[in-house]
Length: 290
Image (cartoon, rainbow, N blue to C red; front, side, top):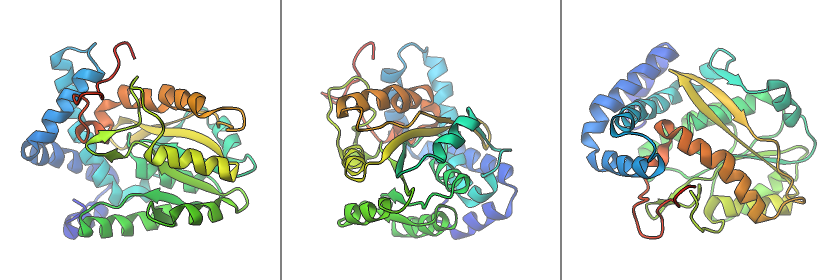
């Protein structure tokens, strides 16, 4: 969808709810049959993450997941229209507003659950904190260009995690009440290193980068995510800010696993990484009873 400017423009022209539905149908009936390897990988990963479910239930989740992935892509064309109480309901909104109004820099971290672009746009619209997003551009130049154009309209400034990014981010976090938005479940070497799923893994990648930035900038960490409820409608879940002066990395990792990691399991039918990792590899299988 992102590589087709005509389709993207059409989705923008249509009502947001209809565009989201079309995206879901395209992913389920067009993309899924052509992506058998990813579908099989998602099936194997889901069996490891949700052994409590029967085969039929997991298959229904996988079908729903393809629809949700298509919805998420199609919703990129209409993110600004979805930043609304009609589409996003905040759990304990007064408490969330109080967090947004706290002094000092803050890093908001999340995973690819629900609609992470809408999450960023909603955050930007909800506060006057100076925003900055960190993202890894897709390898496809056409997709990367379309994505950058779309994100700039609702996310504001964004920076890739390339060389020199840390210095630029630290300069940003030095601003009064600055905020940073970052995803910590990026895929590397056909694997995710967060969530840990009971695996004995140290902080790495974006998560390690975030922890080091937060300590240098004296910034609090606020985990949050969007859970899709139906169609282009979501619940925003958030965790109280984590003060790194009161917690070591081990404690922070445990907190993030319990909140964001569990969200990836509970909402596996709307988690992007499910088809991009391979939890069957030796050393990466989830721990039993996690």
